[in-house]
Length: 125
Image (cartoon, rainbow, N blue to C red; front, side, top):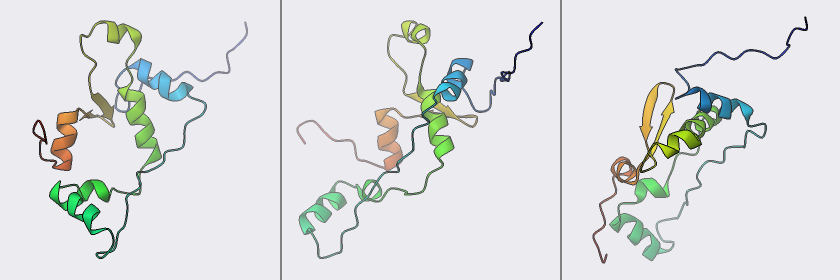
């Protein structure tokens, strides 16, 4: 009887939403490099119109994002954000949810606005 040399992966419920997500994470041979957001650094006297718009719109946090990230956590986030075809067929609307190290992450537009402290734009604005 031949023995299999392939390791048997145990489902890690702390890191992954479902077995599908763990398999997706482990099967991607490319493991794309994570490129952090790039902000812009303007001096006080440079491009005053741009700086005025950043301030007026409350985009200061958006204009200066964090530049250090954990590549592993970002990869886990994306693996857990994916849903299987079967799961998609069961839902009327696709969820904006992921899971990172046991914590559910809501990345819906309304939650992004809340986290970034954006003012809700009104129609015609």
